[in-house]
Length: 220
Image (cartoon, rainbow, N blue to C red; front, side):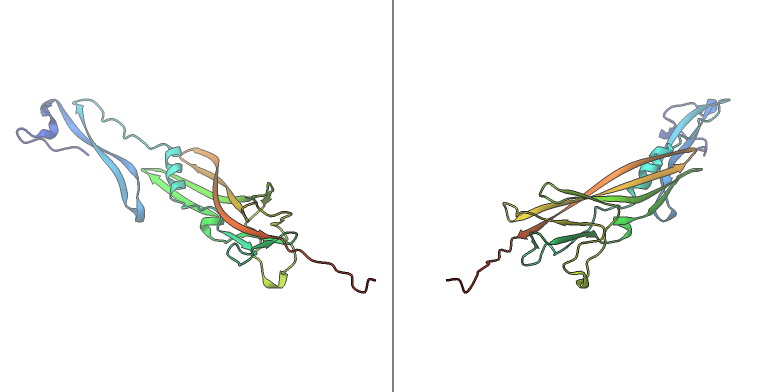
């Protein structure tokens, strides 16, 4: 967009001779929320006979980063059975179930598209797996968010994501970390790439020991 000829002393021209050139407004930016536009305007002096400089383009990789930032990906929403807030927690020798609440933010897939001028980049994120660090030195890699526990399965092991503690924590509770491993791919502007993102959440799970006393009656 060209700027009209200046009035006397117009500061936009900064003393440049309007008879020997023109001012061109260059705007570069990206699509904003709701279809709006977020950009920056810059005024450039172009001498007569010279072509206006090309508007700088945002790189596809930069647009991909903006798309990923807009996804709102979350670490696993930890769920345990027995639950971490139950009166006694888990019991040594009995199965513990682990899973993450399913939502777009915690399991995906999530798709976002960002545009700048004629260039559009689309990024897709999918949860690949969750790695559970159980606090007792054991780790468990689960292919997905896991199976939610139901009361009819009490005493049985999780079909896809469980653990059995063999000892108590010295503090009375084990610190559990669940790390969601995301796989992200993007394409657009003649380019494509993939990357990984890890997001971690934490919980404490008390673990108790039940001792039984065996007595033999009727002994002389």
